[in-house]
Amino acid sequence: MTVASGHQQGHWKEKAPPARAWKGRSGRGRDALAAEQDRAAGGRDRRFVALGDGRLARASVELKVLPSTRRIRAYLRWSDQGRSPTVYLGQVDHDTRAANLAEAWRMASAKELLTLKPVAPESWADSPSVRASMQGNRGKDTKPELRLRSLLHRGGLRYRVSARPIPDLRRTADLVFTRSRVAVFVDGCYWHGCPEHYRPAATNADFWAKKISGNRERDAETNRLLSQAGWTVVRIWEHEDPVRASERVMRAVRDGPVASTPGIPPTGTDPASGVW
Image (cartoon, rainbow, N blue to C red):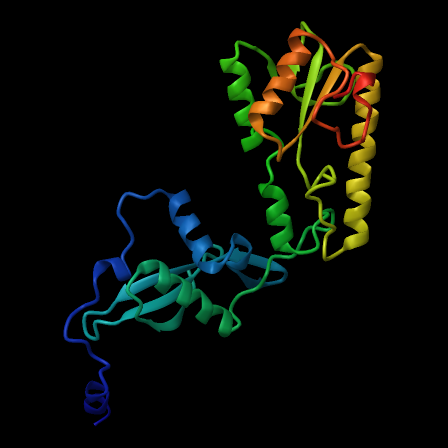
């Protein structure tokens, strides 16, 4: 009786769902599969289940189609000391695998099967998502740096990347021209307190204000130490036009400092002091 009622309500489809709704592309590597799960879950830090005793495991969603029902069923799986526990989440019926994975992760969250990975005590971030964002910020090879380097290379200049202008001084410049003694820094608008684009943090505001202020003080000290050692410091904001920025660097390398330049370093140092 129950089966017949279920059939009348449409619990069995006339045909199986399309492969794109549940089956992943063949030949993908582990990194691609992990990235797919991260996107569906809303972030890598949102894929954890608690195992007890403070232990966590990163879970994944698996989609299956049962021949008897021709419905897509979602399961949450993870690994625990050689075992592979599995929890049935429910049925999903979107047209794409991405949408069905996302729906399954929402089911897992609603069932309170997931937990956020705690932030390490030594971390500056006040949440896993903030920490992930911080880790995603590159220390070198940023897009503004790569654009600048490409223009300078096409202009015939050669340089060292991420190097110390003075070996004994623990300050690394993004570009170093050793013969002309020019050090170039491409400064991020947030981390170095850009007067045009910096906006105070909404959470943990006091900590981040001190952090940015400390960065600016360190920038000023770097400018002073390098200038005293006979180096020309060129500071470029990440928002600056790369062509104009490259022209400033070329002038510094080929002609030496000029009386005034469009770029103002994060510390407000006068260009006449050798920082421009």
